[in-house]
Amino acid sequence: MIRFTHVSKEYPRAGLALRDVNLHVGKGEFVFLTGHSGAGKSTLLKLIFMEERPTQGEVRVSGYCSTDVRRRDIALMRRKIGIVFQDFRLLEDRTAEANVAFALEVTGAPKNTIGSRVAQALARVGLTSKGTSLPSQLSGGEQQRVAIARALVNNPVVLIADEPTGNLDERATRGVFQLLEEIHGAGTAVLMATHDLELIRHSHHRVVELDAGRVVADTPRDGVPPLLGRTGS
Amino acid sequence: MIALREALRATRRAPLLSLLSVVTIAFSLFAVGLFGLVALNIQQALERVEERVEIRAFLADGTSAASVAALAADVGAFPEVASVSYVSEDAALAQARIQLGEFEDVFETGILPASIEVRLKPGARTPAAVGTVADRIRTYAFVEDVRYGEDWVTKFYDIRNIASATGAILGATFAAVAMIIIGATIRMTVLARAREIAIMRLVGATDGFIRRPFLLDGFAKGVAGGLLALALTWLAALLVSRYVVEADFFTPGVAALGVAAGAVIGLFGSLISVGRHLRRV
Figure 1 (cartoon, each protein chain N blue to C red):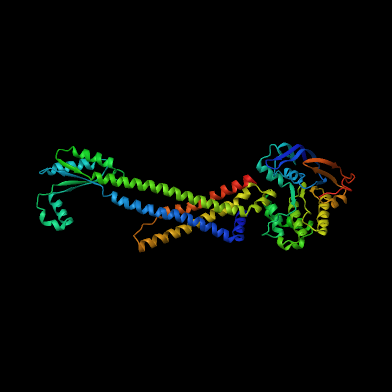
Figure 2 (figure 1 turned 45 degrees about the horizontal axis):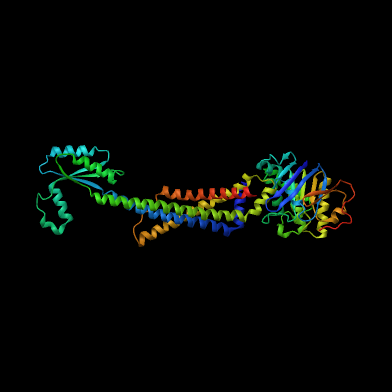
């Protein structure tokens, strides 16, 4: 579903961010992407939702290939993946419901289906009662749940989460991670970039570790947690 | 429908920025409109002067009425000629007495020759065209002299050409400055919504979907700015007419064209600004 083949990415000023990355994420997998700051995690995620294109190699996502994808196809491809960021990226001037509905409206979803689908998505993230709240009226954890609801409302095949718990306290972090686990349990693949070694330690999912743009470890599902005893930033 | 809602939402969220855009468009077009008004009035003043370009062919004494009629018919048939009129000796004398009242006693019957006055069609009043017609009239045997104020016509056209060239350059400069200012204003509204655009793209909005509200917004602001500019220009023309000099205003067609220009600038300004922004993100 997501396949990196000999992918390198070089930025004109910052130099090489990824070096010869080969990676495959299958349907329904849960993969942690970890590594120090600047290791290339965000670049790797940007290559998945094609905000960036590889300098070498190719990235395939749900049938779209980075080497020949057109700009319009990128928009269509993004409707098949849900994306969540550390800073939530909600539209501040509209309610939680409107933020989630927006993701449906851009796809041209039938108007009479939008209300019920939004309600379902908000229920799924446990925010049924907060639908009419503005982001500024919600806690960090709640805002991230709205962002997740928005990412889920189009029934994506994969959820990409870039440090989704980076701005949250421990309690909210546990809640959001629990939610991602549930989403994974329902069949959606999850690719989560994180610094949070505690989260990784306490789970049994596959861990891909990046260092200086290279994949330095790829521990499969149900494998031995690779980072026990190590410290990370 | 979604595009309209998003455009309205953007206006509601940043009313000051929207107002600033409309006022900037209005004042830019107002500057162009004022210039246009000055150009229009100068042009009309020049046209009124130009209408006075005429050729006078003085006839030999004793030219028969039949010859005069034949000459008038011939000259009247020239493609450049608008009208031909005969001024008899008596009529010339009467005219001179009216125009030069204090020298009334000097004029005696027979002192002024009969003549024909030839008025030319618009477009045939250039020094070259006037000269050609004058030369053709000179060929008639009973025409003693032909005058058309050659120096005056040449100088007048020099002034007219300078005025036209200056007008075109100044007009183009004003229009270019207006476009740049309006473009910068629209760019500002796009940048103010950069985060929103990024989020739209993230959730899978196509460029067309993102562009539409901006185009509506730009179009509406262009029309509003154009109407405001028209009102300001009309007010300026009214004040000038009342306190300085009688000034003509644009015809309704030209005024509508000005508002349409605002709409087009708003629309294309937005199209270019959003397009440039989208290419970069």
